[in-house]
Image 1 (tube, helix red, strand yellow):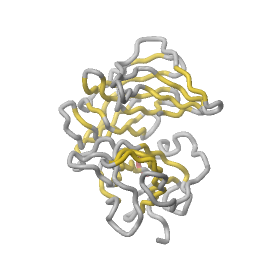
Image 2 (cartoon, helix red, strand yellow):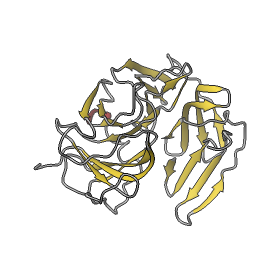
Image 3 (cartoon, helix red, strand yellow):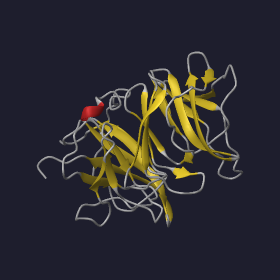
Image 4 (cartoon, helix red, strand yellow):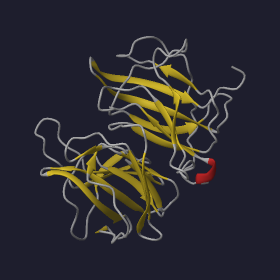
Length: 290
């Protein structure tokens, strides 16, 4: 989902029962909490799921990859919410291979970073690429040492310290009682994405590594594209941490306790091999004084 002001846009997806993929756009008006279909004035991309979508230059949806009825996709599309039209950018440079279950993070209002995913051959990927919409080309691509798909990714305005902490809020299937408090404030739209890439880190969490479900938290420098582990997940120390998971959602919100960033990451639900999850978990980058 992609927020533009008070409206939230949802593109594509798949019916879990029939397997049918969708090519339409739904819009949620958060002032009335009503859903509606967005009218499209021209042709549209092939139906898909497991793609990534970001906010491009304040009023466009930038879509990359995913999987459709005939396999994985590696195409790039822009939807203009003002004109209701889709276009396919003619991007230069070496584009990433076709993939699904990857993540996409907007570093600025025109640059998207693509992380991991699963290839058309079913291989879990470890590469990171950047699409620059101002120049309309793929500018960077590098292989990391970490393989991941069906993970979550957010961008946080900070320089990662050496010892971050992960707290958990449980509500149902993960068991336990809440031990963190979230903020009731609403963060400014894309406040994290608008931070300078030089002073930000992309935080990757969970997913599938090709060998199993992982609870790792990775910090990725969006300038050097170097990734490092900053948290090892459940069982790594005495802190309470959520169970490992994949296909979860994550978002940044204003930090509700003193830490080295103005934001913290909230992880929502996901899938564990033994259960579907409905819990919340909060990750803070280094709680001060602990």
